[in-house]
Length: 258
Ligand code: NAD
Image (cartoon, rainbow, N blue to C red; front, side):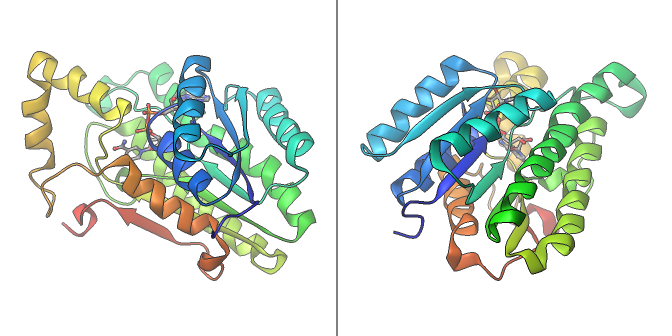
């Protein structure tokens, strides 16, 4: 198995893409630390992981990725349990408000930046220090199609996700000679609790119809599945992807080319 014995931290591991990645890497033999604000979410994902990979080692850490002390804690607890960090899926994020730039308040803007950009930076800052010393490691940051092109009605989200792409490219240059690779994924619309919440915000009871309109511009005209993203993350965290560095991989059914 490609990730046999590898120890991997996943933030936002209590739902959605983090949960799907947890199942995917555990099935390949990885040992996990799942980090999330939601303790209930973490317990539910732990159960999903054990259904897919009964022997998987799973450590749960309730933490807020915007708080430096919490980030320090999830790294320390992971190292105490496993002794090294082989992979890091730096993924926790929120959608934020969906409206015109002029209708965004500073507080709403700062909130999205805090989770989706500062949280990613803090994770990289603490994890890269460890990986550089080890002389090995793979980081996958979650950007978005909204981090590589304009989508509209997402000022804070777009700014944060373009920032994640910048952090990824910057740090991939810095750590390339240290045995550490750093990449980002740019998902399009994947049906997770976040996307359902956002569709409900826009469409109310008609959210499913809004969802169909939402994916119409996509060449494949469907939502992606979390497990499709999980498979990509598992590959990027494995040694098989060891010469992929500093890249941003769209996983969006082709939306980014339109
Ligand atoms: P989700 O809401 O289903 O899951 C996100 C998880 O992150 C939740 O469990 C939540 O509790 C956790 N979280 C939120 N804020 C946190 C914080 N401050 N500290 C710790 N945990 C926190 O969302 P998802 O769709 O799985 O999104 C995961 C990532 O993928 C996000 O970065 C999101 O921006 C990105 N993304 C998602 C899509 C999509 O279509 N689903 C598309 C592009 C990018």
